[in-house]
Image (cartoon, rainbow, N blue to C red; front, side, top):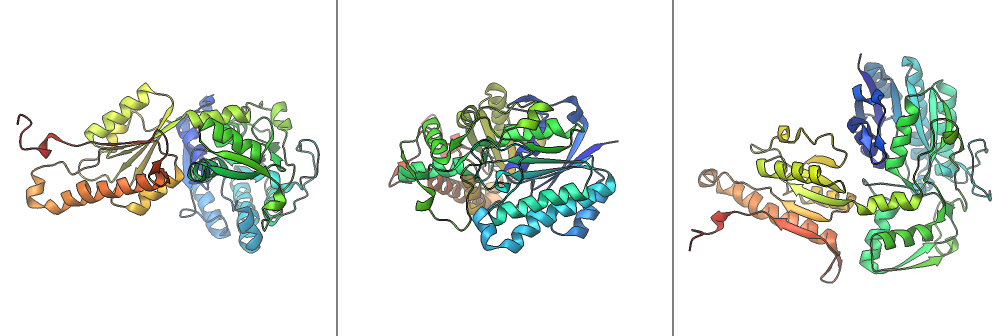
Length: 435
């Protein structure tokens, strides 16, 4: 019988990392337990499953009858929760309740991801799992109620509180500082809020460690060590070698709709007592993110593109490749079977003429290099239908160049350091190479 694990919020920052880790059976922290070799991951994002719809949740879980559900779906925009509390409580409280009821009905385990915002931030030492929750914001209240529902409606539950999460996918503080530092050269960051920066890679790894056990309960899961947002920003600027000045300021200088906990450092106490705490020091985990170079390869499912991707992934451990291909007649994902489970490989089906789609990829990923293999190359087809050649080879290339230029521009005619664009062309641009 196939062991199934449902991951909700599967396209988010943590969900993406978690799905990748389970499917590949490994991450930067090492190999997963053999338990995960036969696991089938059911990646469910909003389009697949709205956790606020109780009936849909019950039917989805009943049909899958999973071993476990890992709930990464949440409304994490803290200020957005403050201005739209109804939506916040639907997603962060009623959503987990629906999942808890559904999991209990089929005997499945439930992992609920929670937050340091369930605490008020008034403590002077790191919070442990036995400290009482006392949220101050709508976000914190909604996540705390979600915790209560999970505990009340399910018997097999893990509640993992994390903080200051960042990773390769999606938007986060690291990417915000990198982008703003390159564009502005001067940043003011609050120095009176203390917490634990946490890499999504580390969190996904520990979710997998806990999930296969029966060590149910509440866990704090954050990077080792604590710092202020200002300290974090300084370390980001240093690691990413950004020519920017970071200056400290107070929370009062940047009033926001939602109150922030002044001190919300968490101690991974229960983790150390059970499966072990292998979270990296936050500075080390951040370096892992910086050292990774990201390639955007277009037409990577074709003959040349796929060979390039396989060669690069086999040769280098410190690169990520995002393969963008529209999968027309020349594209075949079978060419990439040998790397499809590589944790540093991601496929996106997209036409390079889709400017909005390309912009989204650049926004969500700190792309260092572009290699454009995408092209109409069947020469005889150009006689019958020259329009498709103009569409891909001219308009598509122009659209890709514009997307790269927009993402890499940090000032007037100033580009991000180290970025490169490689255009793959042909000998047929000339009559004869011998003349």
